[in-house]
Amino acid sequence: MSTDLIFHILSKRKWQERNNAGTYSTGEDEIECVTASFLNEYLNSQFQGRKNLLLLVIDQNRLANSILKEENGKLYLSLGINLDAVLDKIRVDSAKDGSFDIQVESHV
Image (cartoon, rainbow, N blue to C red; front, side, top):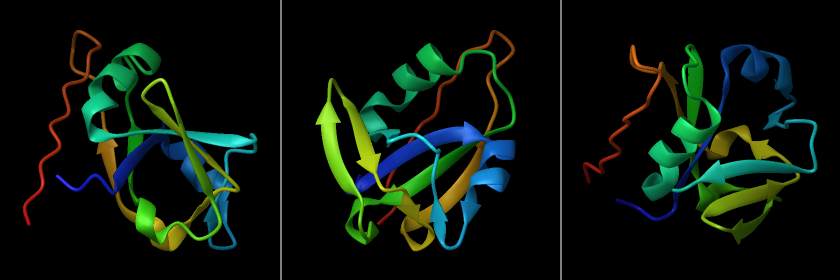
């Protein structure tokens, strides 16, 4: 697994509303992201029972102007995410019991 990959979770609606001019921004000062090792914990604590979410797969090395800081296992980006740093957008839904179990593997 490449440690250069980080993940951001949002609703499909928010993605459509907030990605323009080559950048995605939440309108907040910082964008919360997580590494693969914290992905399920984060999804289950913040998005339990949610459907129709997008998991953005982001390459840290491609972030243009964002400043990345780490705090308690979470990563925070300032200045938005340039869209060419987003490698993939994956739709995720919780299981019937409301939980998530996402397995992230590298196939290099």
